[in-house]
Length: 165
Image (cartoon, rainbow, N blue to C red; front, side, top):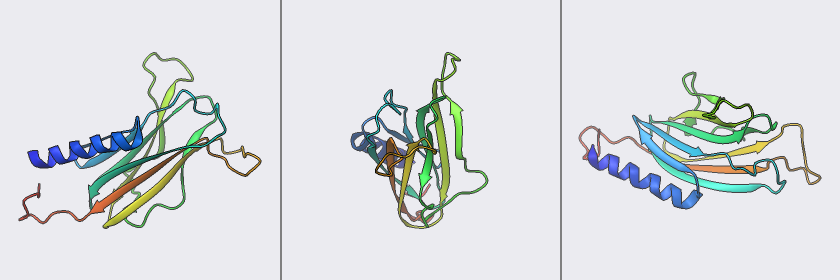
């Protein structure tokens, strides 16, 4: 159990290096990938892309938490279908938005959560876009910020294997 916790912690540190300010941690079978709001969200039309990688096993839950600012009109969406190795269930949040402001002011930071469960082995690639749904640039682009989440889903260890829970 301790070895598994150390491996998961090291995976989180690896993601920090790849994604800049994104964090990753696992607790209770949930892989959490969090990308905080950036102060420039919405001020520049040049889409910035960030890539975050992680690992999980079949049966574990994934929560992707993406930060933005309330009142700007920008919202996060999953661009494209849910990968075949993942499944959204009734228990998983699908674009739920919650305020993260600690001072109670309107227009503060928010966190949008997308959740799903790993149902098969393989690579899950998800592209999340921050955009105003009604706006498009002259070249047809909408997103001001993009987060690419790539998760390697492995089979769950058998009960008699050393890494089994």
